Length: 247
Ligand code: NAP
Image (cartoon, rainbow, N blue to C red; front, top):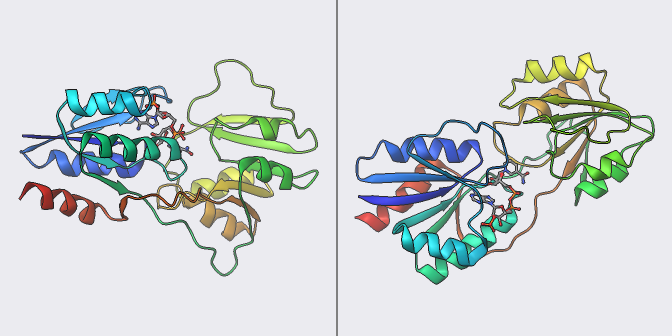
């Protein structure tokens, strides 16, 4: 039996755990940072919480006798990816990244590509009714804008009232269909969307919805990591990579 660690927190991580758990010689262990209450159910084993940096991850890989690691974390989760590279090198455990290619603007899209959430918040025109979908970890730059109205979608509602100037928090966990996104943006009379360029299908509905409604999008570019790591964009290729080590 081979224990395989999946660094997750994405729909790709969930799908990978399902696929690997179908193989009787594999024991997939999904690792989540533990940021959301009531995470999605995954096939195989689950562990939650940080490892304690590179050192903690090395210790985990050795003590749990991990055979290989899949980094299926979100394209914007750069710290854990860097840690995984260092830790796997040190513990001599094979590592591969399963990720998504960023979205590319299509005809009819009106995107303003920016480098950071701080820049995104600054770029919002005065008086805009903006739908913010960049997560709850970096909300401060939006809160500083009292001259806009903000609809913030988060997975878990904040436990204490955050200082949102004018606007509203709503809770929701994707994937959302294009129709759901169109209805939501229409109901709140949103005239601008802010999104991370996360790639993939699971959160693409809002991008199509903005296109359909003719709304501009402030799009935060993914971090350029330039890392030494094998990257696959498909589940099939990533699981074949593992087969190469077992056979
Ligand atoms: P990050 O900045 O790269 O990581 C910060 C720290 O969180 C890491 O050093 C690690 O702590 C811990 N961590 C992150 N992912 C982990 C995992 N899968 N298992 C165990 N520990 C993990 O990550 P982030 O941007 O805060 O994202 C956290 C998690 O949410 C990721 O797993 C990611 O896939 C998911 N997520 C992120 C985004 C996003 O926009 N950033 C969006 C959707 C989902 P230690 O150093 O203590 O090990």
